Amino acid sequence: MNNGFRPHDEAGAGLLFLREEQLRLAQTMMFLAARDMAAALEPILTEEKLGSAHYRVLQVLAFSPGIPVNRLQESLGVTKQSLGRTLGELQERGYLESETALRDRRQRLLRLSKEGQAVEARLFAVVRQRLSAAYREAGGPAVEGFRRVMRGMLSESSRAMMADDAAGRRKGRNGT
Image 1 (cartoon, rainbow, N blue to C red):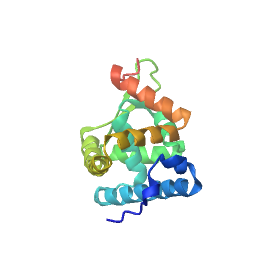
Image 2: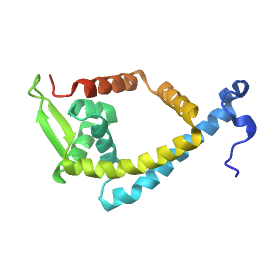
Image 3: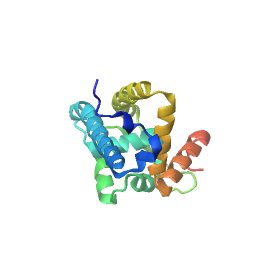
């Protein structure tokens, strides 16, 4: 089967993976993987009458339940107006729950409702299937390498966000 790779395309082969040709191949593969994942999710998004902005909010709330609105905005890199519109639409559908933080009563903490969790679970099932298949095909060492590459591409603020989210999951988020 010709999958577009040549024998000298193996990562680490004499540091050839740092050559421009290899970096462009990686860029192309990231673009195509993102495009193909979006296409795989599109039927569910269309059925639910949701767009990519809704999906991104559902994603973040799934891995960061109890996130403050301002942190959600920061995570997504969107304007307050844009986020407000998206949150309003998700709230109208009953996909969100909010509570007041204990420490700062002005702060709203967001999480997915049961309905929101169900929609996000359907979407994540598609992601899980595609990632699981790719991970099985690549094997354990390649998966670890992939994680390292992805982590290496994260900004310091994204790395901090992941660390904060992991800490929040360990101790529970309630604004305390």
